[in-house]
Image (cartoon, rainbow, N blue to C red; front, side, top):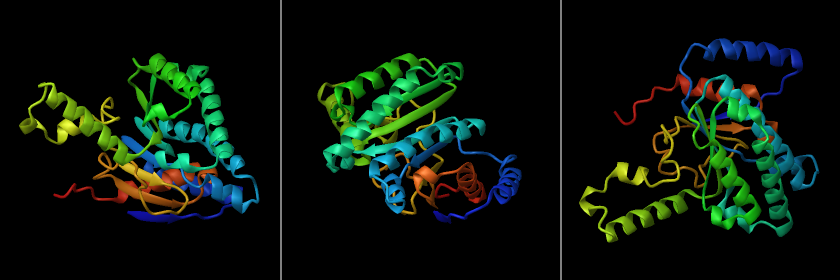
Length: 262
């Protein structure tokens, strides 16, 4: 686990530092699966004396940059934590705007030819029944149109909670036991993994989990899948996230000696 502090650069210094970072990471293995907690939209806006809604708008725009940078590095899977089950406790005004943003971005995805050209499969993970019908319908359409793709994977954790995911998995397993489809003695870790929201992935467990905003906790994100993930906490609000912040996190990952308890 590490906390990476933000450093300010002018355009010239930024370019030099970017080249140095690239030389350090380009010939080493990159994470196959990155999980990222997109945190700090409201605080970003507050520090600029702006409406929190503006922070969410800037944060939504930043997602496209993140995915572009990850695919440039050939990161196969990205799981983004965009909205938790606890976030439903926010004001109706803020929730309505977040859902409007989600609807707008889903429409953009449906019109994005690059996703089809690059064979990107998109899946929404969480308790989607809690979302407005318009958002659920668009999300379902996106999933249907990309279901056959297998080059890259994007998972959007929305109305998501790690504990809720485990509860839902236990319910599915219990039903299979009751129906005689599963012997309780045969239940193991693989059984649980196959009943999680991420069971469709070739590599469900993230190699690296990044959190922005400086907070150093997982906040109920991929609790089962992230058991052996490398953790990296960035001291930068999500709307200010830059390519060099991603690269610095990957450099930290590459410097780790991953022993998985051995």
